[in-house]
Image (cartoon, rainbow, N blue to C red):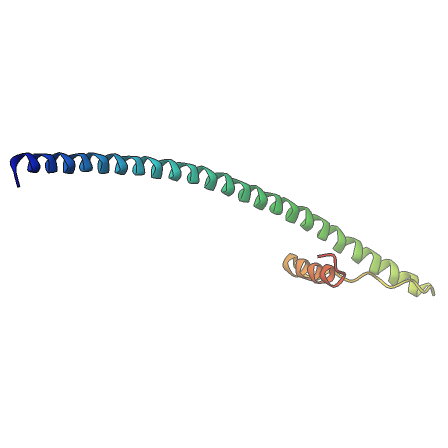
Amino acid sequence: MSGESIERLMDIILQMKINLAHVTETLQQQTFEIREQLGAVFEEEKQALERCLKNIDERLEECAACASDYRRLHANLAVMRAKLIQLGAAPSALPPAPPGDMADLLSWRVRELKEQGRL
């Protein structure tokens, strides 16, 4: 091989090295940008999930208050029904008594709603 051929081959290899470095740099930049975009999307979705959980928590707190009211009203109605029976009346049946704790109450209502085809 002549000196000129070797010089030309070295120039080609150098150009390939420069091109490869440029491709690598471009790939790293695109990877960084994609990572930044995915990170932003991840944070948005995470915040959406956190808002959903906050809404669920608020509804559960409202539900707990309603469950407390239901228990109180059910107890009052049971006393009133017993008095009506003592006075000789035939009052209608009581609505179902709520289970003891909130978890049982929620499970019970979910089952009831499923059976009614509402969930």
